[in-house]
Image 1 (cartoon, rainbow, N blue to C red):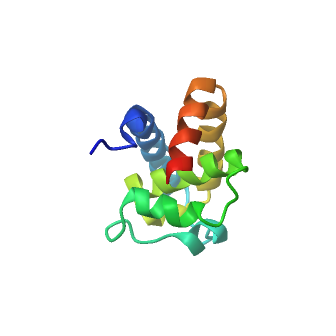
Image 2 (cartoon, helix red, strand yellow):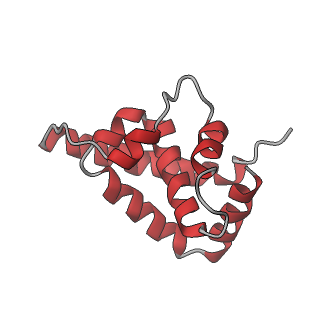
Length: 121
């Protein structure tokens, strides 16, 4: 069976690189205990649940017509899966997610492909 996330491997690699840079800078500048309530509330330890399962769980509460929000959830889950759930507590995590979503939104082919993938979960 083909991995449905395979076309997004490059995107995930880029997100990982950007996230590591942001996380390093954030950790060096300040430690914070503020959590992103909406993300932390839905996070599942990445070691116990696969990325597609995490996505399906999060997407199940979002209407299929809200494509922008579904892409946002994809970015959140992908970052947390790749970089660790503790990233959700970083004060810059929300900004990082928004930046990545804005980049994705500039590429119609990518948004269409991602929307198709997310509909299949």
